[in-house]
Length: 230
Image 1 (cartoon, one colour):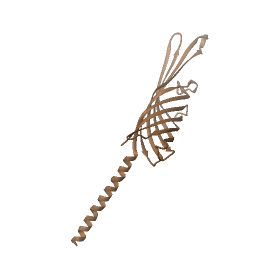
Image 2 (cartoon, helix red, strand yellow):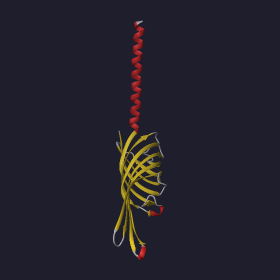
Image 3 (spheres, helix red, strand yellow):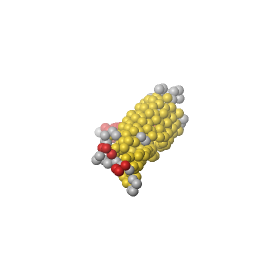
Image 4 (cartoon, helix red, strand yellow):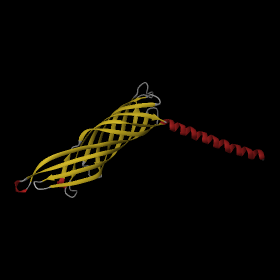
């Protein structure tokens, strides 16, 4: 009877040790597949849309076409799902991209006044993407393809200035704009242990939502990112 009880206790400890070992192996496998990346991106962004000077009046809309090259800084985490398929969640920050124009408008009594529109915004981009390698061995063929979905929060600042002969009227606006759209591209993975590198060229197109899709933009990105494994 004592021997039977001892066998039960021994079995209990062996089972728990095996479970702990299995869990530890699973955690080690997961840990080996996770990596982080952070880098620099040179991005050309072109947008088109309109902004409202008075939210209650549709005829107060002003067209804006912000366009230019900007520096973008990124950070992200990735998971090696298989030898060819990786998943990544990335965050990117873009500084100010602006637009301004000036128009001459007719006024009563044949007088003229100038109206200026200044529009600028920053961008916080969150991108969930998958990357698929051409070959299982990256040392033979390091090329991979990118496909993903990007969501962006863009703090917008607008300034409307009407300059009359006897006075100047200024209207300031600040709000968050939300845009979403697909991303696709191609890259090369330089597998140099323990620090590797990714170089990429990608394209994106996004539209605004929550505010009637008044704004859209296209992106062309050149990215360089070191990759660190745990």
